[in-house]
Image 1: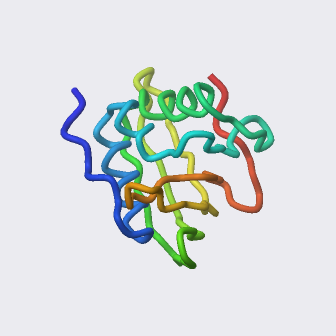
Image 2: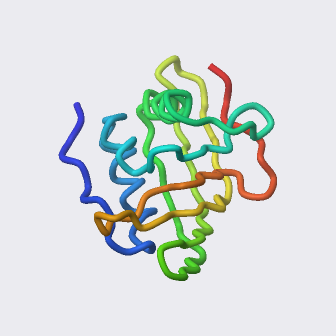
Image 3: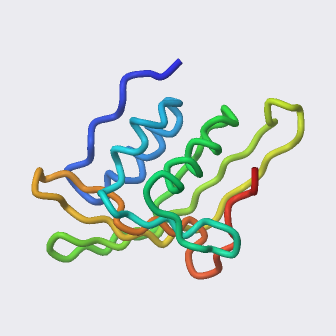
Amino acid sequence: MPGTPHPLPTRPEDVPAALAARFNGGDPAALAELYEEGALLAAGPGGAPLTGPALHAANARLQALGLPIEVRPRHVYATGDLALLLVDWLIEGTAPGGGPVRVGGTAADVVRRGPDGHWRYAVDSPFGTAPEGLPEE
């Protein structure tokens, strides 16, 4: 059952924790609020870009595993209303069907401060400079 969403971040360094809290809360709509309109997820097969409903569906598939995501920020580089986040992340455990799951990487993400003062993903690149793509359905 989805829990209360983590507040939207007002500092770029708070984006990874907000992502983990919303991902682990299990509510795809709450997770989707962390992405600006037109955001891009470089996580399709071979790192192909996903946007709109395809982006949110990819995140929802991972959430449906019911496994927590762990995030460990390495660096946050901010200038004005843009920031680059380098974040190690891992989803690991046993899938609902009983098989092992281990997916993770070092993300190279771009977040932007919106007119409301909250930071959201503009580019979510979970595998950084070596996109492997998320597991297929």
